[in-house]
Length: 546
Picture 1 (cartoon, helix red, strand yellow):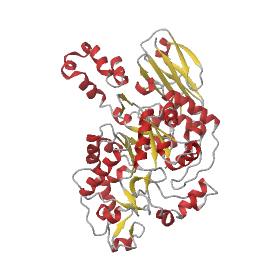
Picture 2 (cartoon, helix red, strand yellow):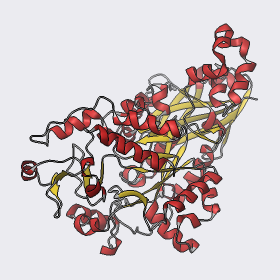
Picture 3 (spheres, rainbow, N blue to C red):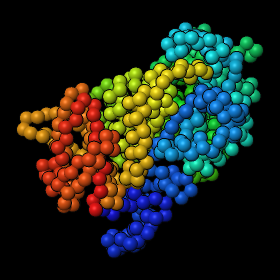
Picture 4 (tube, one colour):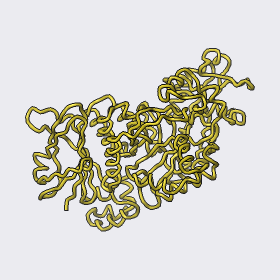
């Protein structure tokens, strides 16, 4: 057991040394297969690296590129992203951020604004977010990509390359958008490569003019991009994934993007799955018969990109319980919307059940409590519950997601079409909380350690409050981090047995409050650590076994 968590915690090539030191402990089988293959078979292939350092349980930070750079241009008196000072990137890294998702950097068409961005539901959203909004504040959606070239607002492709290098110099990796399902309805590809897009006929258009459209200068009828459960996105045109040649084209496009970043966040990735695409669009096309390709697009595309860029990562926005399928096709991380929903609407018991999932699935899940699609965590969950939820998502296995403004307590959700946001003063308690959590996320024990889900027990006969308390333990070398969260609206108590293989007195420091507790190790094993927490309160207890 001791060797097991040591191996997972060691980074780069150092695990070879650790395993070779323990050579005799593993016997002849270990000698035959060697340290490298033993590590690969038991713990999986390390998926991400900056230089020679593996990133385990990384932190990703989403920034609305337009809103952020609009302010940065004024603050630093610059005009291109390549001119940003190095200290900007260093400050991100010092906060424990591993991946920077610079959301919304690609070119789109200004024509989209006038034609599609003032629909009643969008106007309502603008007014709710920014009551004094003006027409000049509205821009095209960054998810209606015209072509994968840098928008002139940010500079050129050469400026993007410099921006990526600045990230690397600070120890950051850069994530950019890939929107596989559709392009802007006014993309130049509509004219130059019309076969890339799903086409219908006059009967389809007559039957459903919300889903099908025709351009004024062309008689061809195309489909808008669409989610099966919502109306079509009027500013987009649907890629036709029933045609194998389009798989090849989109794969080559990914290879081009991969030259300028370290990974892509793939918008609505499940819509490209053969079965999903076929079942969805067969309901709308009245005459055309769609054929299922033999191979999945994602399997082909990911293999092609990783063959050339082995450390490149793929992140899937995915729903409908298709996360595992996309992981099997090669995605490094998939959105964990199920955990988000349980944190928002369900109880600790339901969250506990989700955390019992397979180890590899957990490690490849992206945990979030807000993003550009969802309400702000402070609005959705409230102050205390949002803090408890963040303690949970940031101290379990997987990729930890942070949305710009979340750490200062922003409460207003901004539609992606808005190019201005309201002024919101930092929330003092939320800001202080995230400062504490940043230090927790920088800790080697939570970056490199082994995670174990613990069981809470009743603190006295008949007390059932322990069901409200979630707990787990991180261990790395002699360091431990114990996390306990009361995910309920009432005071709760529990006993949490800790098998530490240690005798003596242990000093525990709560990294959220700086309080120090002294406990006898033998009593931590039986009857267990006594925990009493108020509504949505947490302990993050660091201690060593010296």
